[in-house]
Length: 430
Image (cartoon, rainbow, N blue to C red):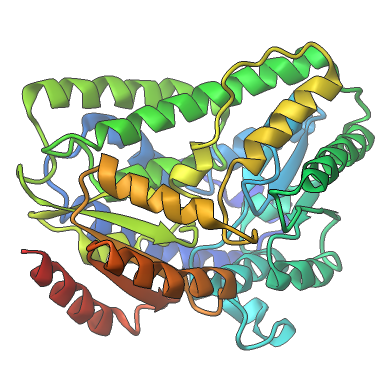
């Protein structure tokens, strides 16, 4: 047991965690976090101490909260994509938690069940679930998958042998009217499944209240990103990424409280001209695949005293909160579900075709954040994002925007090679 922390071992054993493997995972995380977040970063916002605390006890306090909630009859629902609406989960008194894996540590449990050329995120997530390494998986009463890529669609067929699964259809051509109708129907089917799980009936009042709560969290996250437009930048890309990563599984009420404190501090830093990098530092946009904890690889290789990542066009970045409710005017479940559907269909992911709006999102970020360059980041074997990265590189270069494509996985084996390429790219910006 780590000094100063409760003894979580009885809880982990009770929920069926492989203690030996889990110990191996937790043994390396503090060192990695210290090397990436604590040692190299100077003048961090004081409010980031909350997120340091969360990572420092990543499988402790939050898991105990989930266990207590389960003991009180609440249901825990694990998700793998932001297209599964938190608004509906929390309205039915479920607790939604993001389960995507960000390390190759768990691959030993999934390698023999998946093709070798499966993306790192799928390998990691399934490994954590199948290998009984992740307490968040162990706590889940139901896992909700979605059809956002071919790899995931087939992965759910593997995972359902180990955990109760529900797969939600997401449309492929979202600009068509029938796509909207399909998604609305899928959201209503999801409501029915969750009503069966919880033995509760959804009400318009609860759904609207849940929508307002999630909207508040997204509004505050967007404010953090807005403040990154300033020079000097008041918060590092690493810390902004961490805020977003934790928001996928932490309690929304607590997130609202803590992000609000962070916003207040960042606003004060902007007034005082305080930044994490010197004024005039090179400003980078990262665009591409999601970055789940503890995938901080690209940010660690890029950021330094005169280079800062000012925005992420990713699922753990602007896509998480970019499409928000203008107004929540509905008073019936049907109307509210339509509003939710429109919000999620406003998110521009590479799973859609055509997807021209995502390129426009990147261009807009470059302009509004006064970025000096773009990193198009793709997890190995993620074909949708790889296709778009190749095309986007050409279009961005034609506009005179410096850009580099990086395809990698969760290992550190290519760190030296990536550092050389990134250093050359950053040197070109000077």
